[in-house]
Image 1 (spheres, rainbow, N blue to C red):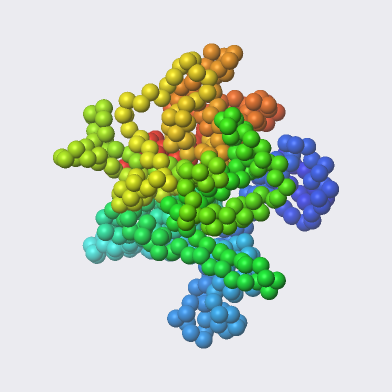
Image 2 (image 1 turned 60 degrees about the vertical axis):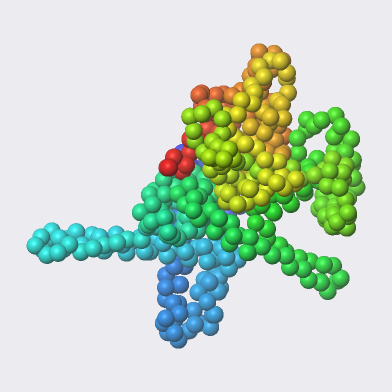
Length: 493
């Protein structure tokens, strides 16, 4: 099926040739034509991004600092290859960081191609001279990422995110282990965006490098900063970066301050409704509320009781810890009876945290420790009650990691527990297996627009209505939690 959009010839099966653009012509398309046209343009854009990455890597190679005055960027008067690529146009998004990622992706693809050429030459040499010693060809462990960029399997942004997320070989982490991880990540990240690919890569690194968790946590802690400066108009401006521990605490505080404005749950306890309504009715902007609340906290923090600060508002970040695997029905305990913890993470953050941080936070009154083990807690309550209990909500948050709707990244604190089978009219149970987290927006969409969620075993599937997909093809709902037990990235011991 083909169409012409004011000089733009579009093959709706996948190819697109551009000779002119008119917004009005796009508006004349049907819904299906609009979707197919956008898919075709996106495929072309991805191909162009691949060429752009290869070209950027070529410019960077010609500008290598070892070339001195003969380097291309220096000859043209630019201080770095990134500056030169940006000046030429198409720097992967505009910023120097975007351009640097583009060059990294193109360089990986270039090195992978060179390694393949060396392997082919070595194979040909072995065929022609079978008596000669074999030629040792050792491609870089990340070479498959470069190949995936060249053949279009991964976008340059996703490939760079995976490469950075996996890091470098270290004690206990060999190039072979990283190479195996690359293969699994390429298969898992074919259809996800760069941010999701980065998280998957970090999870993978944590799963194969438990010994490095503490050092990476120390490195992130060392990178924390807060900088402020006065603007000419008298306003104070600033930037900051926080490690996952402090960041989760700060973010949870802001979510509780502004939650009713930014998509927090609609179903709140009766005692909380008045506070939520006051925030909604507040004439100040959401950003202004957050800023002034932060200053108020700073003013009273030294003397205030954390339990009464802002009424019931108090960060309740969950520290999730997992006990070591044991056939016993209770958590593993050491020789002296102390609890033995394998690892843990802070709810809403992707990375594993070290045991030393777990020990400290368990004693910190600003955190709620949640032991994820078979401790006898009853989490299924059948039809004895309609709403999910606090324990069930905590378990759902750990299992789902936030809203399970595709491409939604809202945290557990912005989610509601949805019954797969209607409690009132469908005989549904208030049990974990029959519950799933959805943010308020997607929960309303599910009920109002004809979407359905079903379960087969431990997998949950979103069934679109016919207006969204005539075939109603099920979409697998993937958990965002680091506790995903069935993820191939966490299958290794």
